[in-house]
Amino acid sequence: MLKTIHGVYRNGNIELREKPAGIHDDTVVIVTFLELDEINLKNRGIDKTQAAELRARLSTFAEDWESPEMDIYDNYDAIKSKL
Image 1 (cartoon, helix red, strand yellow):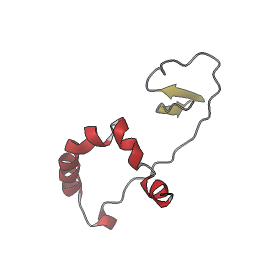
Image 2 (cartoon, rainbow, N blue to C red):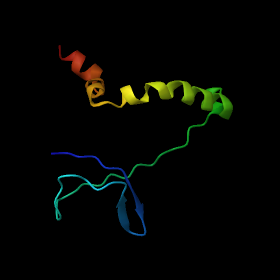
Image 3 (cartoon, helix red, strand yellow):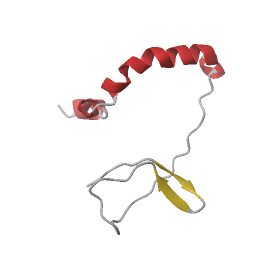
Image 4 (cartoon, rainbow, N blue to C red):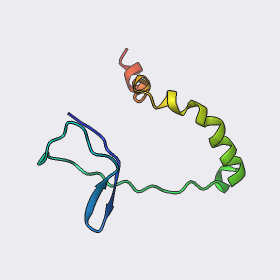
């Protein structure tokens, strides 16, 4: 079983943003550290105001896009190539 929970590494500890449901103490975990790079808006030809407007327009799709039913599209090309 795999379960993903966001968190941060701070002072040698992993702090989870939420308590994982159904996970017992002493459960083995794998931790992956993500290095999030800032997006260079200038390189993409937009400024902060335009980025904010775009984010606001796309926010109406967020609930649908993040729904479990949309997970099927995560590997769409790989799945389609097997058909």
